[in-house]
Image 1 (cartoon, rainbow, N blue to C red):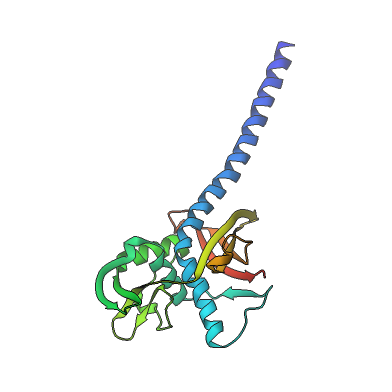
Image 2 (image 1 turned 120 degrees about the horizontal axis):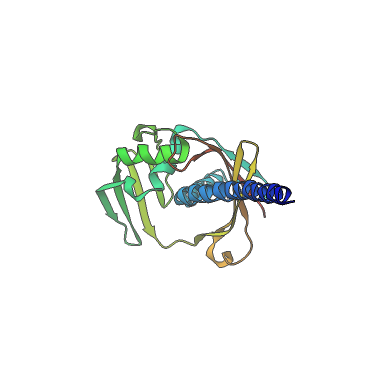
Length: 222
């Protein structure tokens, strides 16, 4: 009877240990994805603003329910990395007082840029990858006069970004970060989300966070 009791106790302990490992693994990946989610957040305003700006320039309306897949080319990854870490902000190289606002141009710390892009995407980006696309109020681009810069345009704006919820999921080797956000006129920022941002991720030893972003999709909800 004592031998049987010992076997039952050992079986129970083993079962509890296996369950604990499963729970720990589940909570661990969500904890790491949260770090990646927080890291990429510095790019989200510029990303959504640029898309909105392009539609305005083309005199088109962003369709409700429409899904845009952002191509993670070298320009996009460089922009994102430059805007997601204060360490990427180098010395001030120019300043403009417009009366109604002011623009400051900063050099980009190349070493910090490589480190941040490895953290986000598992690839080392260079300032030479930046294009001369029209910048948002906070952006990184190749300025015709000043070269590759971080562009900080301080001006009163009606556009607000408000994160409503963030969730994390796993399917096989594919991991996903889903953010529901409001982006638009500040008067609606307390209302429901109007955009869903989905980051596709995977495990990678190239990033100190343990995961990298491999894809971005933006869905317009209403």
